Length: 163
Image (cartoon, rainbow, N blue to C red; front, top):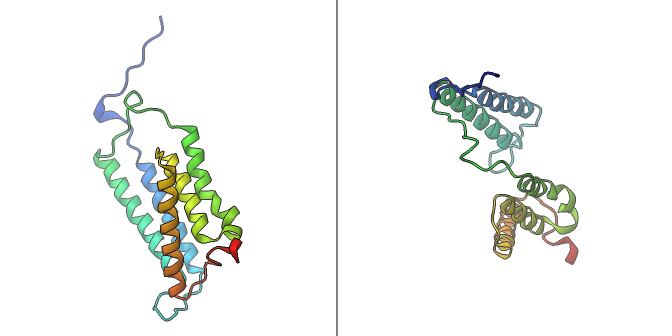
């Protein structure tokens, strides 16, 4: 009769410190990439590399926090029996929401593309309020478009199909 493997005791579970390390490395790659971006500033005092630097620093910081949590034992693995398995359909919906701007930005414009992306991602996370999700996505996209245009940054036409 084969031996039955027992689950490791709670304190002996593997600690996924490598997730934090991967996140910190990703942040370091962002920081390295920011070095190649021109650092000239415009009238608001921020250059094009500012956002890339902020994201890189944030990823490194969060990676270090995740490593510390894992080493202290605060990072708990999800029990397979307690949670439902990941949904492939939900993942594909969220992935489509991230990819849709690559396909539609030029023809639909920023607000409509943001509307579609927002609705797809929210559906991937379980929302079933399609009309509300589309409306929120459009409002957020329009606000971002107007905000960037006030700063002198062009995101293309508001609704290129109409113009």
